[in-house]
Length: 423
Image (cartoon, rainbow, N blue to C red; front, side):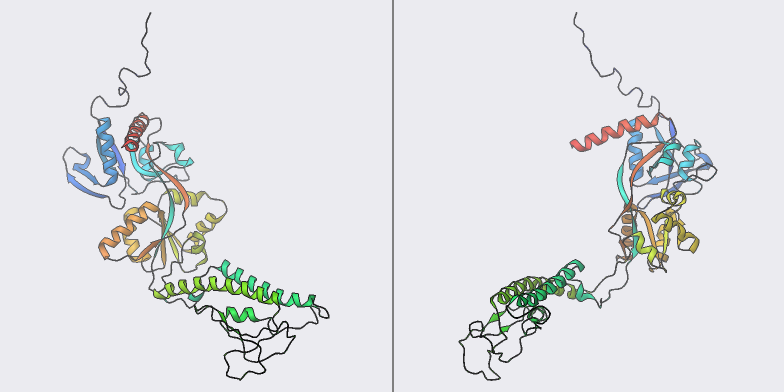
């Protein structure tokens, strides 16, 4: 008997698409680049319907069309995403979903173990980090700018190499007969590496020594100025005039010439890099960006931090017991930590962060959007975002606990992701 089998169900979308078009209450919050407005509607609760526009609305309407439902937007009383209170209740959008006042909330929400206990969530929409947004100060000239072309590590290695070369030039003579490290003294050639590094030429004069090792030349050193070092060689002469181009330096042994030659080559490469970078730095003024990490904020006594009210960041600060974030949480008692809602962000950005005595901590996507909106209004960029991120997050949509909408949305999101990758 021939039997045809298949792993495909007869009606694959039977349990994932609504048969009729119900109206689902969608809890939302206004994010940057999203707008809300009210429309008079006698059929809506309170006689007004909330209109929502932006990328979150586009996501909701994509699922509404795919799953056959009509969205009805609603705002939370606190106008926040929501945190858990000490009595176990929830505020904001999460509170509306937990109390079944909304069928789902698109967020996007940062998922955490505490939130996962209260609601179900979709697959991950995006990943990111929290960052710091600060105001840009005026262009200034850094008095220590001459140190910036090279990193501290390069400066340290250069100093260590200089000391090593000086030690070699002092140590090797002690190996000669009749001399020791303690009683050999400092030769006239010992500090030649310092003259090479500091662009100082060798003093004129004649120092007599064994004729077989005497070097009848002078090194005209100007490495840091960009010109190559050169040595003018002449045969031994009975005397030299004070104004002659060629003078007789102190005794130069072959190993001294080798060590100094290698040091000059190293210094030449270093000087070329230094002079080129220094010229680039002097061409523009220095723009300070001091707040790159949370530690930078903690160490600055006159700067306050703004976080999102009733957010996952605030929840973490309330629950933390020790470490860096405990120090951040302690700033609230010192008046250096505030929590504002999303609707207050633009006003806080203009009145507090722009003046330099506040910084804003939020997800990277929101901070970039806020800078874009401010640039559209002001015509100039007055803010910067920290290079370092912290508290990595995964953003999701949330649903009521054990809601069948979770599977439906995840299935449709998986199909959309596959179509995007195959496009």
